[in-house]
Image (cartoon, rainbow, N blue to C red; front, side, top):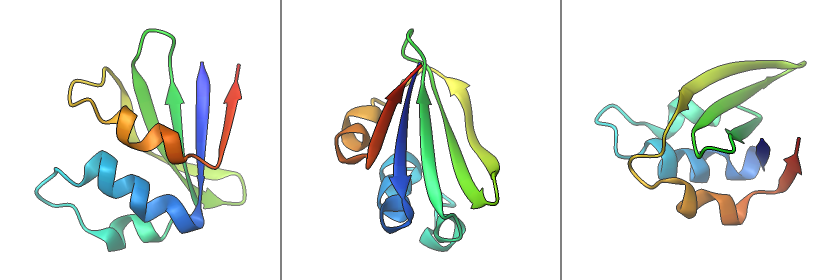
Amino acid sequence: MTRYYYGQNKVVLAARELFGWQEDYADEKYSRYTGLEIALQEDGRFSVWGDLGEEDAELLRDTKPDHKNLLPRVLEFADERTKE
C-alpha cells in the first residue's frame, strides 16, 4: 500500500479533484480538515481520509476502485508519500 499525504494548504485542492463531481460538493465541507490522506492499495483501489488533528481522522471515501480515473489528477501534487 502507498499513502499520499496532503497538507492543510492542499486539502481543498485535492478534495475538488476527488469529490468535485458530486452534486453536493462544497469547499467548506473539506476546509475543516488539517490534512488529507489517500491510501492506495496494490490492486488500484483507494480510500480517502480527512485528518481532524490529535490523531483522529474521518473516512471520506471507502476503499473502492478508481472508476472515474481521479487519482492521476491528485497523486502528483501530494506533499508526502510512504510505502508500506
